[in-house]
Amino acid sequence: MWTRAELKSRAKAGLKRYYWYGLLVSFVAGILGASSGGGGALPSFSGSLGGSYMEGSEVGVSGHVTAYDIGFAMILLSIILAVCAAVFLFSIFVSNVVYVGKCRYFTISSLEQQNAGFEELFGCFKKGRYMNVVKIQFFRGLYEFLWSLLLIIPGIVKHYEYYMVPYLAAEYPDMDRKEVFRLSRQMMAGNKFATWVLELSFIGWYLLGLLACCIGGIFVNPYYEATMAELYLKLREERLGIPRGGVHSPDRDGAVYTQNAEGGGSWQNGPEGNRF
Image (tube, rainbow, N blue to C red):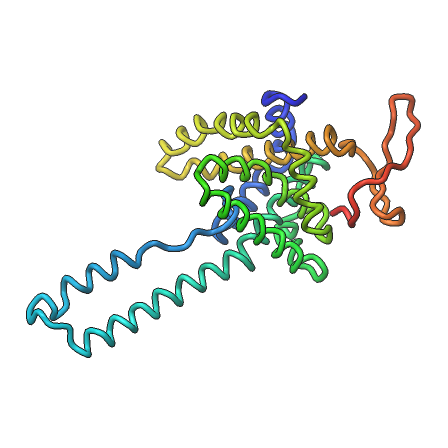
């Protein structure tokens, strides 16, 4: 069973070798809407725009809605809807994919204990990976949203149940969507509350970062991301039977070579797909 101290210790040890690269990756991902929440949110400024217009329109003067008022309101509404649609599509086709790429970068960096290369942030845009990653992330967001409609608690539970979906998509970008969600549920069974507590343990760091001109939290992001990557690698080992140093063979249909204590080993069927 993993502990917070273990994961954080591993994360800090690795970050000593690639912290500034990790900071750059986190910063660029944040700009593209791929923060830790996993995508951008729709803007909620339509009410304020509509309210400010109505206060200054001729309705307050004449008491009647003119054709000019209706026309202007329709144009304004169309612009708002177009902006919302653009943000929504950007989130699905860019932000969500970059988020998976960020998970990919920190997972590889944690495995190799060195900088994986900035280009890994956009590694899921490659041909043969992109559309499947888009689909997986879209359904992840959709499922969490639909469960949230039932009440907040079911939505939170599903959020943590699907917590490893982007990490699995990063490692196995051509894996079937249903299999990705099944493996995530398997990995997170009994680990949802502990993962929530692990996230809460960073609140102090982020509050401290806010004291540094409200931008200090940026410097905490690599530490957070590296720790979560370590959590994935640990659960991958405990629940999927894939050792941290396991060697993947693309010629064996996704099988993983597991080394035992005596120095020998054997091939075991792992999740299908080309790892990294």
